[in-house]
Image (cartoon, rainbow, N blue to C red; front, side):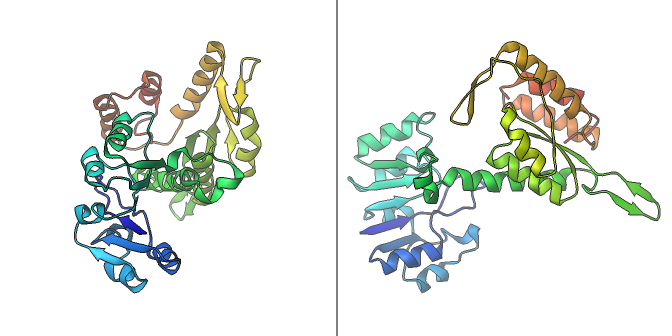
Length: 288
């Protein structure tokens, strides 16, 4: 069976669907692994690292799709890519089928069996295949690093001969997988961290990481199913927005010009939350 790993074409995408270590294991199990030239380069895997573990290099994606029994990708392929795949092939990738029906339709027309790794249930038996949690974990970590690089001050408290710099205040929305990693990273960098989450049971997790939980007095309207909030009252949401807005408004600041550019970018991208834009306007100058 031939497994194909094409190069990701999405802008600013650095990931690759299969690392050399995984390719080595698959080759040992008898699979034929085909990798497009340069597929792993953005992830710091050169072509030689795939050759050393027994994978074969092919010059372009069409040459992979023409013979592959299974196609491994990070991002969902474009309809033109799906059309180039061999009929009866299997596709494994993020698909986001509910919001990208054209991908599903193209797979049906081409006779491709597509498996969406983003739809794998987050249960104990499927933990080894849980791509969502691993990527959310990295996202929470990276978001704090990006914020620290952009912020016009240091995150930890620093005492110098010229005086003391107070620590930066970081406000995090949500204490899920990404949020908890963001909390841990911001705390390690020395920031004061405050966290908002609509689920009251997350308070203990937040505080165990050394952060302050922005607590809104709950009511009987909060309905939680499977760890996710399914419904709350308008009154509760209003109280939460007012409380969180006060904490966000006290966040640390940068240059006003940068703050204004952020507001303009949100408008240009048709950002779906006018409430969040209103909170940003009330932030201190340059709030991150």
